[in-house]
Length: 459
Ligand code: ATP
Image (tube, rainbow, N blue to C red; front, top):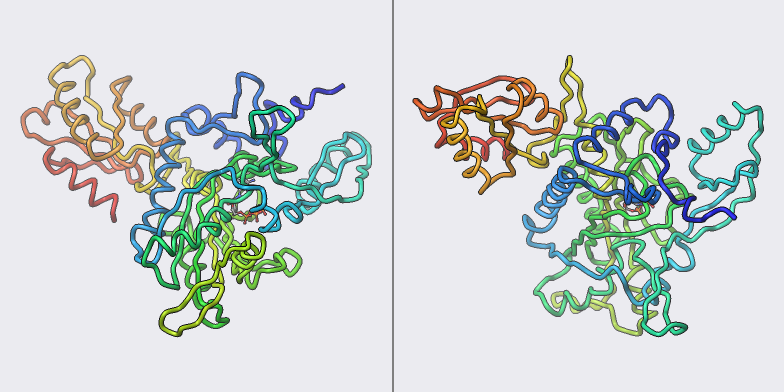
């Protein structure tokens, strides 16, 4: 019998197989990501686990910066939004109420030739597979589509036979809604207000692939914004959040022509959704969803009220009305955002490979080099500058090879500025700062470096 674990193992050419051949750019990104420590295949030394990825030192930094920028825009800079961090494991009734146990499904079909399973609605991947068999002179034949539930199960409990089945949350949304009353009772928020959360979610995806784009374990960053149950006002809020979220990606450097808003077709729309648009990125594997903006009506709170027996309504002091608020949701993937930031930033100029990442999210902001590694006075001053900058920024140190090579190496990981300490620095208290994108160099006083970088980052 075939080992079921093997079906889930990462095979060396998996990422290639999942992507059309023209995806040369994806090959380059996957290889750079592994070589420079952004992303590695999950549990690689054991053959991997399909649909799981580990983030290396630079990937962890980039992901952290993306989340931090999101949190800043969505929570810290707003008076009407608070943050929350809820459990991955929840009472299984939550998922009954939210409709996930019954309806969180994708249509699954199986190839009758090789028994590989696919999502019936992913036409590009199916076409690819049919082409693969037709090259072998075979005509693909498919089983009827059946519903496949995406929730990942886990068992908890200490007594064998009495363990209960729980789910690793399929979305981070429900942790927010079940705490709606807790937030109301422990804060002074008044409607309209929002609750934001970042955290892991898990889905038993039928066809994980396209590198980190579709994984089994991934991170989401979401806002649930509660508004009055009023058509006009809720649509006004909806438009506001839709545009704000699109602008956020642009403000962090994604090329505007690579982004679009797409309204859900009638058959894509969840039955309770009053409006749904996706923010999509034009990836090498097609226009793909990066984030969804959904008008969820009163679905979540009304269902939790029904299933828990608890009152989930809101009392408006001004109008003396009691109602179940409506919800506008913005739901983005951290891993997808990071992948699209990487793709968008990738550039080749002559022999240079550059990640033109916005300085706000670049893993390192600055790299510091002594011009020559065998001149103790240069090394000493460079170290001093490095140690001082480290207190405020993520800084890299490099003293290997020649300066040109060091620049190239930093360009490839997106470091916006390189500081070189040379003999003049010893006399004049200044250094050369070289810009990643323009390659221009300027002399800056050592004492001005911090304010210079701060200004450039916040431009
Ligand atoms: P898709 O249609 O691509 O399966 P979805 O519409 O089911 O996505 P949502 O449920 O709206 O996705 O989830 C919100 C966000 O979470 C998505 O926009 C995406 O960025 C992220 N996300 C969802 N599923 C995955 C996954 N399997 N891997 C990585 N990120 C994901």
